Image (cartoon, rainbow, N blue to C red; front, side):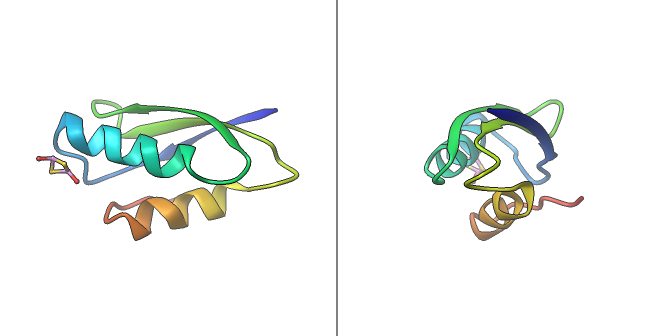
Length: 69
Ligand code: 9UX
């Protein structure tokens, strides 16, 4: 299992945090996600054989947030 922290911009409330967390945890290969509103980041535990950070960032973008590199 690997861990990566991605930047997540555009979250404004606790529900945003839950939404981002839910989106990330629903991805195949993701086993955990810790999202911080204050830090504008998500730390994700994942299986690198199943998913990479590009796919995670895309999912966050699809949910309506910004996930710049
Ligand atoms: Mo907060 Mo976010 O009121 O997608 S849920 S703005």
